[in-house]
Amino acid sequence: MDKKILIVEDDKDLNETLSDFLGFYFKVQSSFDGEDCINKVYESKFDLIILDVKLPIKNGFEVAKEIRKFSDVPIIFLTSLDSQKDIEKGFISGADDYIKKPFSLMELKFRIDAILKRVYNNHKKIDIKEYVFDTQNLELFKNNKKIHLKNKELRLLTLFIKNKNKILTKDDIFNEIYEFDETPNEPSLRVFVSTLRKLGFEIETIKNVGYKFVI
Image 1: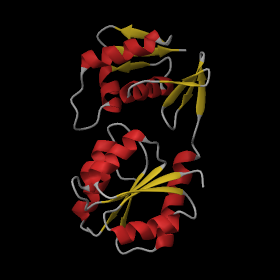
Image 2: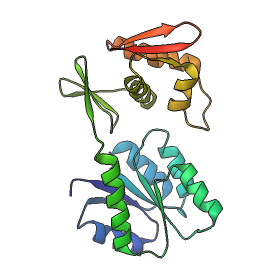
Image 3: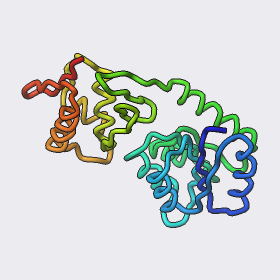
Image 4: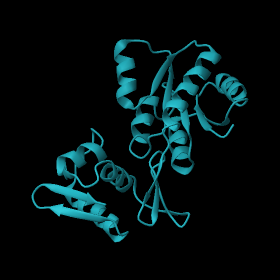
């Protein structure tokens, strides 16, 4: 019951059915349009999102792309669209799974369980200097207090930790922390690195190449 799921479906009857069924297993919250969904994910932490494609204001593909700019929360698309192109578009937008309507409630539950097990069983917390870094939720703590960092700063820190004491080129970093539809920004990267340095992390600048995170 500790996992929190956001159900985004504009069909009120279906939304209520899903909420009632999944409410036996998880904490659930409902949303009925794309804009409201994005706002809710900005404001609260969810462990998984069930996202309809055909939504008012912003469709599910647009919503997923927006969410992927600041969150890696697992997303399952619900849709009546079944062409290969639509399925491909769903995964490109950031889906972790794709289930076609009509569907069995238990099938949805099994798919949710599989994703939650895969994603959250790999949950790790790493001690770095006086900090604790939650690699799953991308959160940094000091003395049990959360340190506020921008999403790209947290992504950069994750990349550095995975490649500690190794030289990363600027292209390596750009490919990891920027989305495919974003333009890499070197001045911003320098600001991200500077922020991490101010926290006490040792990051060497490798002239004309990139950076090295030293532990």
